[in-house]
Length: 83
Image (cartoon, rainbow, N blue to C red; front, side, top):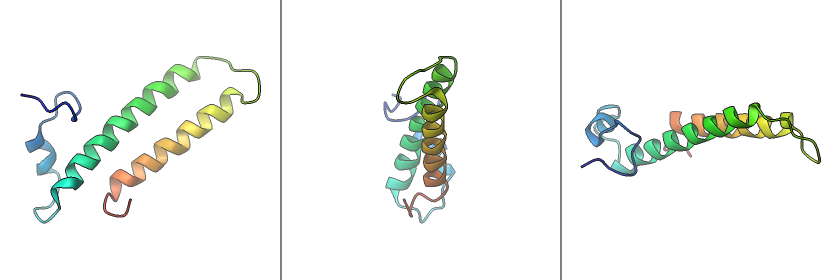
C-alpha cells in the first residue's frame, strides 16, 4: 500500500536507498515532505506566472517570494539535518 505522505510513484525503499545507513529515519520522511512542498510551490508559481496582478503586490513580488521559498526548500533538502 502506498504511503500517503510520499510523492506518487515513490516508495519508502527508494527514499531509504538515497540516504546513508547511519541517517536517522526522520531524514528520509522530512526530505520527502520537502519534495512535495517544492512540487506544490512550483505548480503555484507556474499558475501565477500566467496571471497579471495589480495592486499592493504585483506579479513580480509574488513570483519573487515563491522563488525565494523554493530556494529555501531546495537548500533544506540538500542539508536536512541543518534545517
